[in-house]
Length: 119
Image 1 (spheres, rainbow, N blue to C red):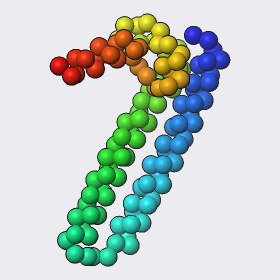
Image 2 (cartoon, rainbow, N blue to C red):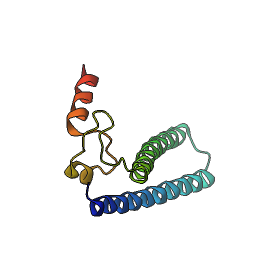
Image 3 (cartoon, rainbow, N blue to C red):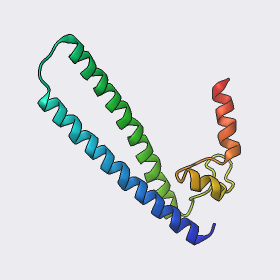
Image 4 (cartoon, helix red, strand yellow):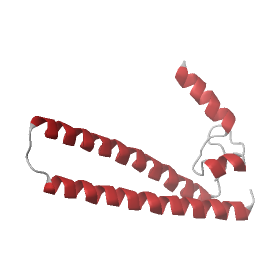
């Protein structure tokens, strides 16, 4: 794989990582502030707050998973294995890596996994 492409993907991954960390930090601060300023209210307010907390937790979990995928992709760059399918060992096409820089499977392997999970 071309070194300039790998450098471009590394920069894209670093940028996405920085954005995610910033978003997680902002959401965490906003959540803490809303909890501190929350007045004890009726049961409807409490239910709405509980739903908000669950949504924030789900968003944070999704973002944390994505952050983990990005960190793993950066580690593969350092190891020299970036762009190799973890299942079949073939090169993942550059178009796929541009769309999903932290992809670990080629299109064929990903499609096969999705078909298996639907069965």
